[in-house]
Image 1 (cartoon, rainbow, N blue to C red):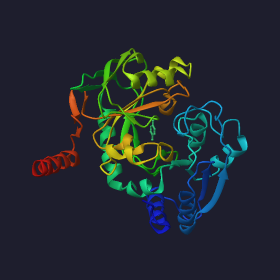
Image 2: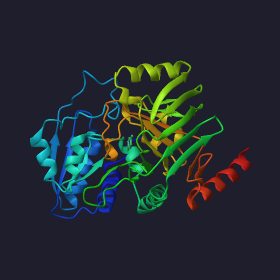
Image 3: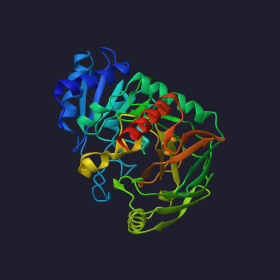
Image 4: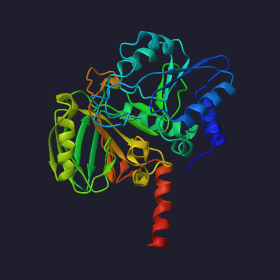
Length: 361
Ligand SMILES: O=c1ccc(O)c[nH]1
């Protein structure tokens, strides 16, 4: 369902206010061929209304001959900024970049952030942006979860379906994604609401069993029959299952890059306004699946690069896998039990839903 410019401008103003935009600051809106016109129109209106000097930098698409998907998160690494010093200079000179194109996991993004420029990614459809407009409560919840990760040495993920994955932690920071950029040099993604980190290099071992309803991104498919992945010293060494396992394997093999099989980020979803069931309501090419990455209580893990965390591994292939019904424990203490986040909000919501479940049986 569409949203009005009034509502989307209001949502942009909330995000820009939370991102501490001040009158007179320079905002550059980075756009590409797939930028949503209403998102762009309302971003410019909101930032201008708040007294910012607003530029727009429109860059032509790249990678078409290589990418296997139109999803902007499917082929990572090179972007229209690669080898484009003039465009990079414009973004470095800005206080805030509104990325309506997708720079994620690009070396240029780090280079720009290091100058203190803030970057906010926003490429989901306008109605998803409005439904998942971030709040200070989202930030508090994600930051509290990140502190748990920062204090931990091991993350263990288990499930009734058979998952048992151990990740040693400590080499990389916890990354908070709460939907706005309130500090100089910060990157975030609107919409989001989850916490993640990267396991120490080579220190993930065990098995992940994808069960019915778990999600494969960028394919945007619900798993319909179990897929078992074996993880040995930080790399997926075996993928077995039915047709979807074959499709996943063939997609990854097309990149011809052993780094595609490395375990990338691990973490869990904390956004109650995001929904597991949402994938079925959208044409795959109209969104990038942030409801799937952010829904409360998921275990989100991934394969591919770790440069986002400061690691040296880059690869164009990035697979995100949000899972249901997992138990995530940090040094033996569960932070998620069977898909229920073990904080005040998560437990209260689970209690309400089980009561509701009893009523409607
Ligand atoms: O916001 C994002 C999106 C994709 C991803 O892999 C991580 N964070």
